[in-house]
Image (tube, rainbow, N blue to C red; front, side, top):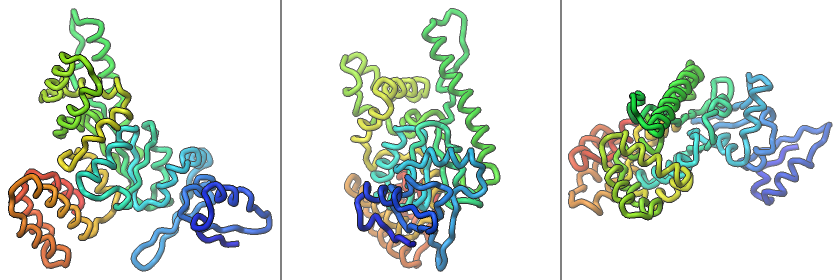
Length: 361
């Protein structure tokens, strides 16, 4: 029996009921579906994925070559949200709520396209246990790109404990040093895990997502929510000064203090209200996006560049006529991406679009 796309005709709950109840010992039942509700309740060993190529389709079996323990790990993680990765053209795995909340917003505001439009699923693992899900992406299983985004947790300050230091200072430095050690250990594990697997690559924030966000030039966005975090004027004034400081030991400690005080998820929600096209996407995130999607069409690249031009044109008095003409020519193969880059550098040489193009071209 073959059932084609039941999600097109019946409610989510009925889909699950149908799947559970329709079971005959003498009949093979095949579902074709894009429904995460059905894939959620399916045994991963019974799932096959069809991937469209130029003039043919590839078939992936997600559990192929895995032992029962690994299959169980995957099965446990594939709930209705995470099963999106089975239907995505590319995947980004993140470790926490802040990344899950802010990265899609940054991409949409900075580039004018969503991760969904790019065919990329961003999945929150809610830990650093990336291997449980990332093992799906392999020559023998799902042959799609998977970026892992995590923190290296490098020390934001000198962790040497000196004679006469206060107990609070010692405690803080010890915590920073322990995080640094764990970050290095995590990198060793992930480096070994992704070795000889071209479908997986890990990208690291040098410190943490929040610290690297400010370090990339986004202190202004954080400053907009100071009043939501603190109430007394001296602390508000000090916080702004520290966020504007160039020393990572100063601004890094402050932004982490704010995030931890509010809870990183809620902090990200507040921060998201102030994300704009001027918010700079940290390089390691750009690299992860570029890796997760195997190729970017000329139209997608041109759309993103035009979006940046339109946004800049509202804020600066620059003649973008020639750049727009070159972009139009690029769409129809009458100009190269290098010619587009040259004109971007002539008009908006500091714009973050140059970083994006360099990573995806």
